[in-house]
Length: 174
Image (cartoon, rainbow, N blue to C red; front, side, top):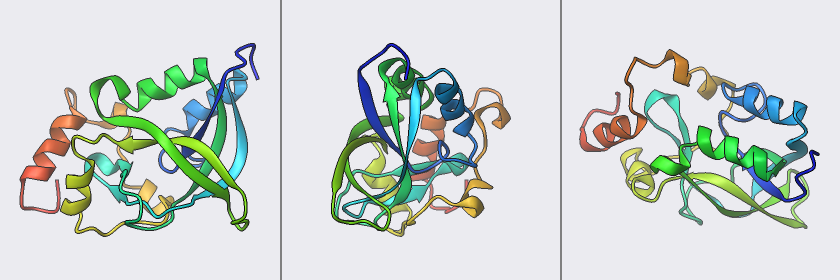
């Protein structure tokens, strides 16, 4: 890892995972020695995982609801964390990085304290309700096909506006 000795464990469950639309950022962090892949993990407690507008996956901070979610664990430098926070829209209220407990897939004994990017509290619970309180256990290949990369979205697309519109309309599709 780079000279930055402060590391944060980050649980990825969506587009940052291997084979998905934003994994190139994780790959770049690994090349820059700002991230290390630690393995496959599962959330200790169930959490809702839903897909919102533009095919964007959201983990929702409602422990005890939804399913245990599968993902990947990375050790990330603080320099790498700045880049992840920027992608996830921390400063604009798109996601918030919060603590989560995990265990290695297939080994439920030892819990790992990490952080994950959750749908911002300003809309997360309403998104869960709007999706009929039906969630996923994993953002897989099929779900990944519906993700619209930032560069492929219409010019001027505002993801927070899309979420607000989705939450206020009766139609399931946007």
